[in-house]
Length: 242
Image (cartoon, rainbow, N blue to C red; front, top):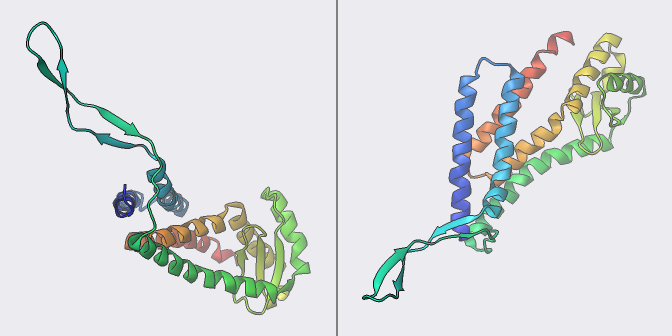
């Protein structure tokens, strides 16, 4: 399989996955935000696994009929047989113009998300520990059965509370969070720690990775946006508590 055929197969099979996902989303349009979030997570995860599945799957090739001659007492009688050859060899597309163009698009799309990640790191470097909220966060984390330690910090650069970090999860609070009512602070910590428990950051990273690989496919970007909207609607259910 050439690199063009490899990329083409990824494109059309990815389209099938996305179209099926949009059709399923239409059928469950009245379902909960959690159900829609799960649907788009599965769809984008399937897109990420598709290139690997195509590369390692067996390649089936049908050879043309082979003519054989059967010796016997009479005249030779030609017979035909069809041989089905299975060659489970991994596809190794060579680096060429098409593959290089695709990889360049992946790199440019990744840069778009890297800028956002760099800003989060910049905010974390300029933050300071929120001692007044750390103990509550540990208590809530124990109730939610979060095994990872989540650090709570505050920063003047954070306009709203946010959860960040995959390997080292953290919650960033605005600078004025120390003056909040205890009930409000506790609700915010519950809300952000729930994202950590549900691995929402990892899911969002999955969507970003799918956009990088399928940067040329508009449906992939729309699916990633639907994933963010489903998570945002889930957040809105808790806003009235703040």
